[in-house]
Image (tube, rainbow, N blue to C red; front, side):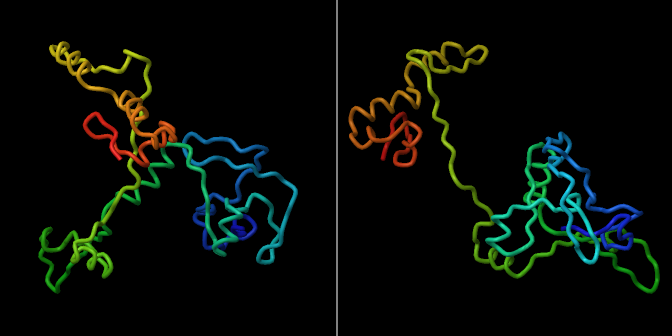
Length: 214
């Protein structure tokens, strides 16, 4: 539960200029609705109340949560449904924003303005990050590889044409098989492949030079 704050407790730490910085209390909602410019507006029905920190508050102060995560980790974990582009950008901003930095101001007894000397763009590197860099360890990684498995009818595979190179595109399409066609050939020669679906083939085989190889 958040708060209480607002008119019930104007002196709460979350209050700023007479309003809660976390946007509590929220409005009552009969159903959960999507919000184009942010997070969804979750269902909040009137009725139930609880005494929190000496004040009676209702569902408008309930922080969005997941019961399973609360029981598993025994901690306060806020959960949001990311359904808009703005919400996704908010998450990835923290992943790709770069190193923590700070503007440092150097002053002396006599004021001599020198922008380069007074303002330094400093980068803070903690001990764990410094050790990983000294050891040459990877700072990031991706998992797992995504393989596109196209499906097409006979003699109807996709061909990409470029202006002035139409004949080359046709010749390339004739000489090169699509990913689907070598899969049929693999099923004819490999009994193990016959037990796998098309979508499961990349778990056991790798596509290399127009052939599926174990």
